[in-house]
Image 1 (cartoon, rainbow, N blue to C red):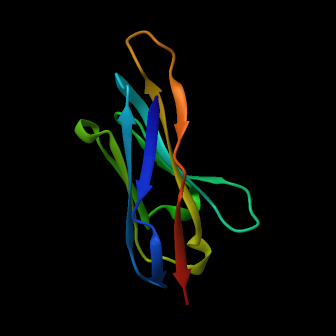
Image 2: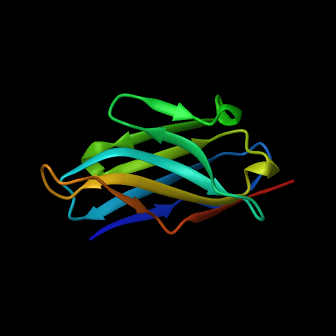
Length: 120
């Protein structure tokens, strides 16, 4: 069983910064892509950023403010969020494609989410 646990959410003022972390644990042979999505109140979940072994991608509206990174040795992905705006408020979820053994198909795993609230 593989689990993803997010941390780092909280209350921050407009213009502030937060760094989210998401650590994977359990039976892991390899993690391919990892990413962050968010869901604002009353809205659908949307992709924020994703990272593979060599590439990163971001939602167009977030480029320049958010940075995704990962520590493969720790099976952890991070999301640095700067210049936060009220519209960044929501629950942030991390996800990963995990291989539990060689040649096994990748499994999509999601965390429980961490709440980010940006107050004005």
